[in-house]
Length: 293
Image (cartoon, rainbow, N blue to C red):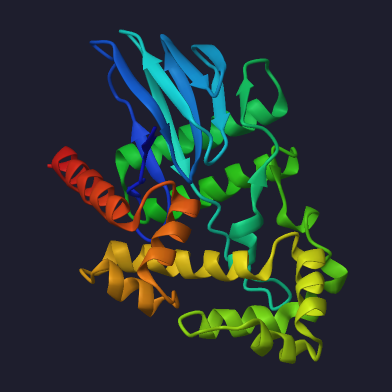
C-alpha cells in the first residue's frame, strides 16, 4: 500500500488539480494507495476503472466519482480516456469562537467509502459545473485564478455537505456543551508543544481527571489524548514540509516526549513514518516541478 502525499497545485491550500488536456495515448494504472485528501474524478472521455477496497467500478464518460479520505483505492485508465482529477481537504476556517478548527478537521468525515454519480440529478449537475469551472480557471490562469479555484472548491464542498455526502462535524458534537471545553481547546492550541498533562487541563474545568476525560469524550466523541496528538502531528507535518529540521527536533518541538512515540503516533494518522512522509513529499514536489517546466 502506497501512502500518497499530495502536493497542492494551488498555493496556500490543500487543492491538487490534474487537468487532462489530451486523451491517454497508452494505458495507465495507479496501484493501491491511500491519502488524507478527498478525491473527485470527472470522466470526460473514454473509460476508467476504480477499485475501492473490494469493490470495482467501471466509469463511463460523464460519470463523477467521489472517494473518501484515507480509503484504499487503485485505478486503471484505458487508452483514449480523459478526465479531471481533484484532491483536497476541507481546510475550513470557521473563525468562530464557539468552535475549533483542529477539532473540525479531526472529526470531519464522509458517510461512505465512495459514491458514483451517474444518473442525472441536481447534485451531479452542480458538481459538474463546479468541476468544469475549476478546470477552466486552472487552464487559463488569469488574474486571481487561485481565488476562483478555492471559491469553486468551497462551493463543491457545500453541495457535498448539503446532500449529506459529507457529514458536518456538528453532527458528531454536542454543540450545546461545546462551550464547556473551549478553555481546553484554546489551551491545547497555545501549549501543544509543551508537556500537557491531564492534571493541567482538568483544572481548567475545575474537575478531577476522570471526570474531565468523560466530559471531553462525551462532547467530542474522542479522547483528549487522541485530540492532543492530532494537533501535534498536524504541526509536525508543517515542519516536515517547510524546514530541514531532523525528526528528533520536530518531535520535541511539537510536544512529544520521545522520538519513538512521535513516530508511532505519526504513523497512526498518516500511515507512514515522518521520514517516509518527508521523502514522499520531496519526490512529489520534484515531480510536480519537472511537470511544470
